[in-house]
Image (cartoon, rainbow, N blue to C red; front, side):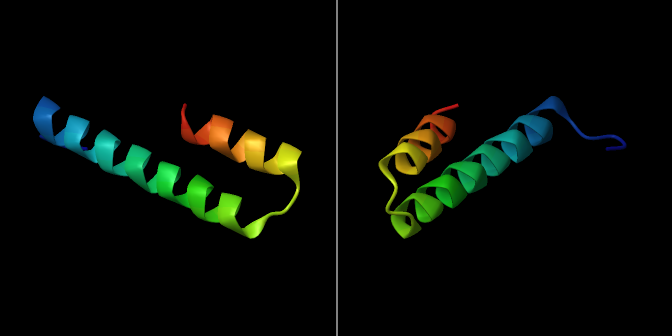
Length: 46
């Protein structure tokens, strides 16, 4: 993290959040259990 600007840190955080969202939603497609789906959808919104 040396010499990173605030803007680059924010951009990295946004990319990480999008990747997490995408991962949770992909997992959501793979499970049949309603509780698991609800949990994954909940986590994707955080």
